[in-house]
Length: 301
Image 1 (tube, rainbow, N blue to C red):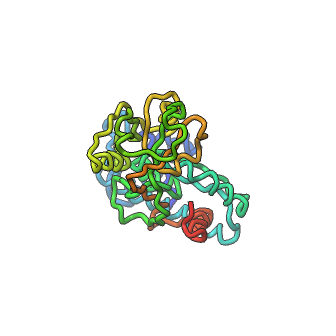
Image 2 (image 1 turned 45 degrees about the vertical axis):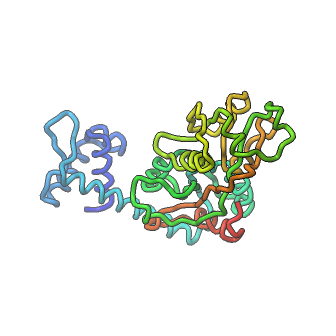
């Protein structure tokens, strides 16, 4: 059995039909059926249950699918590693980021492209669970996220470069005139405002951290809206609907004319940030240099 046959097998498994798989592979159906039969004869097992209209993997087929996907990924990464020894730093750097870390990327990417102009970028936004899945599928190279990383699988599979902690600040509408000249606000004052919280169905760490800080001061936030989008929350605040508490770095992407940022005078809590990647995969040079750029800057965001 060779890599070509494994690719045939995976395509059939994904499509559930030999005919459709053959079209994707740009080959005729009979030769593909013959290759599948040869694989089953070599292994001495049936890989598919053929009783229905759609082919279904047997237990043996499921096992081969898992192993084949990993083998093909390793093969692809090996080819990439060998090519990069001669080609230098180029290609596509795929970065995943949680919504509250997106604002950290633009300046970093601008500096990076001055050194490596042949690298292009693919940026994916999502919560921890989605980005963890994309890392494992090798759909992205790196993730920038708040820590701890709330993934579905084992945390020990990730390498993590911690970055400087990010202090929380209060964000209120600019139109709230009593605070127009203020630079700070107290937790007692914050507790009087309608509160808009950043939260997804699965990742709740930041939400819980902020709520716990309220409770530590003896208050309960008056939550009027849960939202997974920083941009939407900013739009709601700009309209005077409520206030929020965000990591300070988030504010670098938004003009202070629509919202006002205030330091919280009687609270000192931080949001931890890190860059994550899989330990057991080859990282392209573009990703290695991106990580190194943070190390050389002493982790400065």
